[in-house]
Image 1 (cartoon, rainbow, N blue to C red):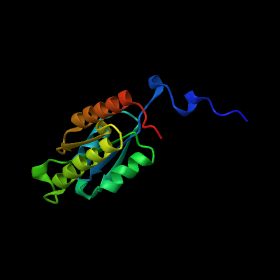
Image 2: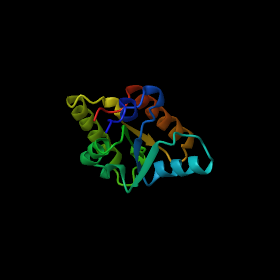
Image 3: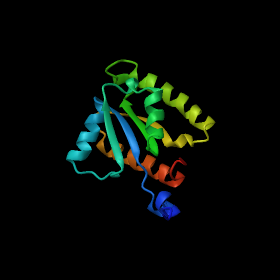
Image 4: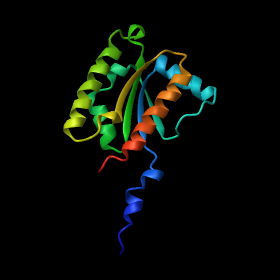
Length: 146
């Protein structure tokens, strides 16, 4: 039995379409996502959105498991810090992201694979811009060696 050609296991950079997992607060950022969808705004199809009750509920383990289980990048989208439904959710998430970025550096994984943004409810265009930006950044980095 012949082994599968290497280029099928590790696609060439030209063909690499990164999987980006977006943890999205169900309040303001989710409104931006829904607005982008209803307005049929274009954003990468490789974006997978997981709505959470509060971005502060996304733990270190969730981010690391996403990367371990196939995501090439992870993005957290929380409410504006002054508009957080749970007061400190966005602040807690930002501290976790900083911590996980340090862990990624120690694991020789590029820290740019993880980002956090804060969005208001009606920022559909900004949502699309941000997910295009992280997708392009991760595409440039290539797949995580597994």
